[in-house]
Image (cartoon, rainbow, N blue to C red; front, side):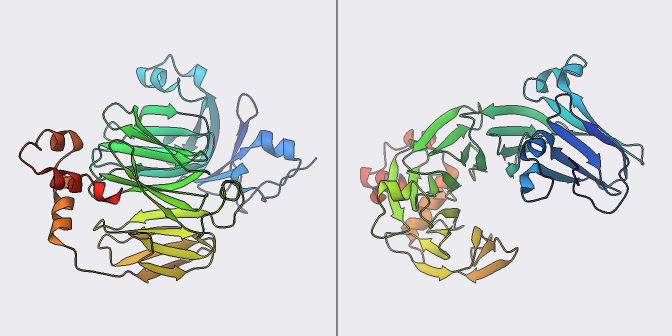
Length: 360
């Protein structure tokens, strides 16, 4: 059977298979390498590009003259770096360039779904292979840690604004919150009836909002994992069977506003919402909405679509109470433990407000 692989109408200088024929790499264009999941291509018996996940195009920015897929077993004894990373990887892609430069590329076994960098130089990446990887950009980008939880695909990860915790979410009903110092799981947020598609932290890092294909958004206490409030995309609320299946109203993305007063969601039914209570503060329509994010000022909301376009909406503004602004300011300055240690002189009613207990 003949396979006509993706081409850029430029020279293919070199091609290579991995040791187990799982991957095939070739230079296609002056500075481009294409990585193919060869075993899936053979199994499917077709070489068209109907499944984009079978192809990975890497832009190297330099003329590629040679490629190689190296087995980790051949490298892990050479240096401490290779020995450390050999526990997490099976092979590397190595490219040789006309400039004399040799590059070694880490290969996730599936699509890298999200990357997020902390102010401390730790880059977090999530992948469809279910792996969360942490890279030390200060230490030449070396792999710091690789975490694989339940093996299900991860759709994304997000650092808290105070960079004390990190949340992952994906094709599972549970979102995991990790401590930044040990990267151990501190909270497992389990209440959704379908895959958790997105999550975000409030500006003071004390709240987490998760959204799911089950048409709900859930607001959590970030430190103890308690549910504070549940928001429903559909009313009346769909039955368990409907929410857990192809309901046509998957919530795809969520973004907290920079002032912490509300968050925005985008769903498959073409609706975007600004939520701060049981009823949306604002509702709009957008075709094929896929993701959303606030500007740093919070004045506009950008919604990306499957069509490659971006719709920008002006958000509603309101005067915040001094009490609310003080809570955000205190939350940004104090972590949960330090707040608990300094509450002797604070009235219990104010403590409950600082902990968002009025939302329960």
